[in-house]
Image (cartoon, rainbow, N blue to C red; front, side, top):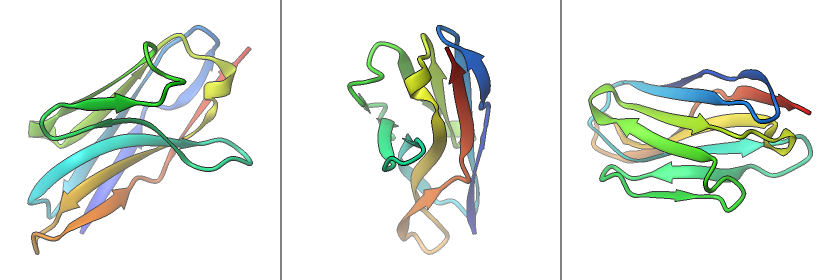
Length: 120
């Protein structure tokens, strides 16, 4: 069984910063790409940032220059540093990972989500 557990969400004023963390645990053989998605009320879930096992990254246009995704492969953890936050960044943020479990089959795993609220 593989689990992704997020932490670091909360309430922040516009212009502030937050750092999200997501740790993968369980029967993990290998982790490919990891990333962060978000879903605001009434909207579809969207990709925020993604990082491959080799460190290549891609970002949504709306967060480029403000958010930074990174990972610690030794800790099976991915981070999202969010700066210059805007009210439109308010959403539930979900961690995602392409993880091979004990059977060496890659599956898509999701965290439970963490709320980020940016006040104006």
